[in-house]
Structure formats: C-alpha cells, structure tokens
Image (cartoon, rainbow, N blue to C red; front, side, top):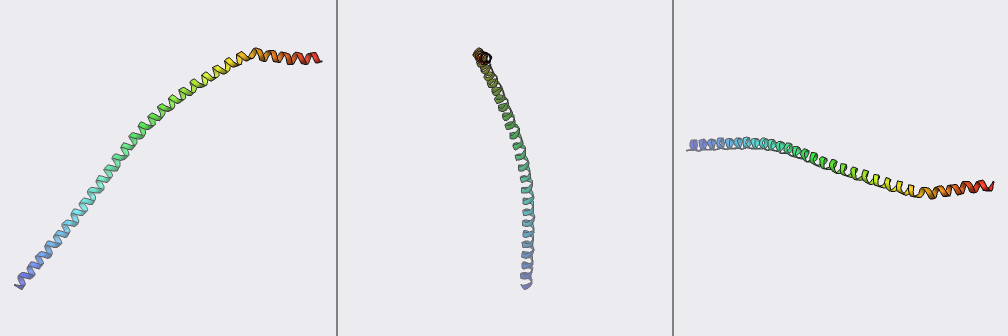
Length: 108
C-alpha cells in the first residue's frame, strides 16, 4: 500500500508539473497573441490617424484658399474705394496746392 501511495503521489506530482507546464505554455501563447494584437491595433490606429490628418489638412487647405480669396476680394474692394476717394479728393487737393503755390508767389 505504501508503494501504491508513493506511486499515486508521484503520478499526482507529474500531473501537477504537467498542468503547470501547460499553464505556463498557454500563458506564453496568450502573451504573444496579445502582443501581436496590440501591434496590429497600433498599426491600424496609426493608419486611421494618418487618414484623418490627410482629411483635416485638405479641409484646412480649402479653408485657407477660401480665406485667401475673400481677403484678396476685400483688398481689391478697399483699393477701389480708396481710388474713388482719392479721385474725388483730387480737385480739392489741387485747388489747395494752387492756393499754397500762388499764395507764396504773391508774397514774393
């Protein structure tokens, strides 16, 4: 009976070692699988982020072009207003210049 008990203990120890070995191997497999999945998820996230960056850059460029066009139009309109104002003020400025020039000439 002692021999049978010892044999049973040996068998139990072997089974326990085998169970620990299997658990260790399964743990290593799960870790490797998790690492592979995380790498794939990171790569996918990077690709998605790059796509979003491209879209946002395109939107920003389009907005910039629209703002540039608006600014050019506003600048052109302001230049036109200034030219009109200048043209309207030109006769009065010419009269004032003549008064200054002829006024100085009369004093001599």
